[in-house]
Each structure stands twice: as C-alpha cells, then as structure tokens.
Length: 329
Image (cartoon, rainbow, N blue to C red; front, side, top):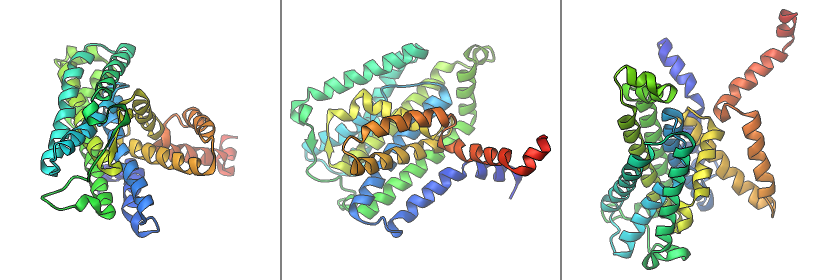
C-alpha cells in the first residue's frame, strides 16, 4: 500500500469501523425488530447529517432549515401514498427531485447572504415549509399521516423486511458518505473550501463561489429528500414536526458532535445521539435534564468532535507517560 492510501485509511478509519459495525450488528445480537428499527433511524438521520456536513464543513454554510428537505421528501411519499401510488421507482426519484427543487429555489435566495443572515433566512424558509405542511388537511395536517404500507419495489415488499431495509439504509449511507468524500476531494470541493476560507481570493483567481455553493446546496437537499423518504418508510408515519427548526438543530448538533469538516463524523454523531436518547429515555423519566448537559459537555471537551477524540486521548496518554515527562524535564 502506498503512503497516501495509508494516510487516507487512517483519516477515515473511525467511519469505516462504524460502517462495518453497523453491517455486523444484525448478526451480533441486534437482529430483533426494535434494534434494527433504531439502527435504521440512526443511519437515515446519519445520511441527512452527512449532507448537512457537506455544507457546514465543506462550504461553511450553517443551515437551520435542512430538516425541511427531509420533510419534503417524506411528504412526497405521503402524497403518492394518498394517491394510491407505492412504486419506489416513482416515489423515491420524485421525493429526491422535490427536495432538490426546494433547495434550488430557496438556495438561490439564501446564498446571496452569509453568516448570521444565512442562518436566519434558512430558518425562515424551513418554518415556511413547516407551516405549509401543517395546513395540508388532506395529508393529516397537524396530526400527521399514517402510511397504508411501505413503498414497493417492482411490485415486491422488500422494504417490509427489516433486515433488507437495514442493509438498504446502510448501503445508501455508505454511498452518500463515499460520494461526499470524493466530492470534497475533487476540484469542485477545493473551490468550495477556498470560497469558505476566503471568498475574495477565490474571486481573484477566477472562481465565482455562488454557483459552486448553489450546486452543493442542491445536492445536500437531494440527499435530505432521500433520507426523508426512507424515514417515512421506517416510521410509516409523517408529521409536520419533521420539518421543524428543532429537527434542523438536531442535525446540526450531530455534525458538531461528530466533528465539523469530517463527513464520517456526522455518521458517528447521528448514531451517538440516537442511541443516547434511547438509552436515557429508558433509564430516566426526565431524561432530557441529563441529555442536555451531556451535549454541552461534549461541545466543551470535544472541540474536534468524536472523530478527533482518539487523537486527543493518544496525545494525553503520550504527555502523561513517564518517558515523555522525563524527556520534557
């Protein structure tokens, strides 16, 4: 193996181990229905978090309305279900296209701002989408909508099988992560990072940041729509709460907890938050009183996120070792 391959493998080792663990989980005591449903939810949210991490870490665009793309993808599934259409080859592309179109229209306006103004305008668009779906009485309104059945694929009910659904989510999560990683490593990704660091310098060398950012925003929205369509099938229930700003904040914290700038960190962050929520809710009645401070502590003591934790621990052990102390002395 060449040195660059070693370096790449080391950089993404934690994400690769996480994906392998998710692949092995059904055969290591996590094969019952509840565990598979929980892991599927974590992987679906991980997809949305990876797409948001592409914006935050790659382009420096902190969005507080990313959950709207998930909600639009989920409501596309609902609309087809209400119309009696359940073929996945129709439903999923439509969900992705609807979310991408929403991202294109809102991104064309939002990306003309930056910083706090960008955060606030994405929040405003997200809330507009939230209240719009709340007004759809034919699709359940505030009460939400229960699907008649999961989406079919070429007439088969493959998504009804929890193990098949688990590996479908895992495969799509891996595909989104690999695609995002390759994108950030490409010329397109280098322009995004250059525009994030110094937009004026990017302009000076002949690159207009706006179209690159808009393409990244639409791609992230498309992945959000895919994750929303999957989540609708996972829960078989969709409500406007999926589009709320609190869901966007949850996705953003998954990115921060995992490690900003590392797409694999978003997977770790999603998995950690979903599992922590589930564990605490079974142990405590007022579990949020513990969950909140834990998130604050993680932000304080894990500035590089979960991805950077092993490096920090290794550095701490090296500093505390007797040989290192003697050398410093």
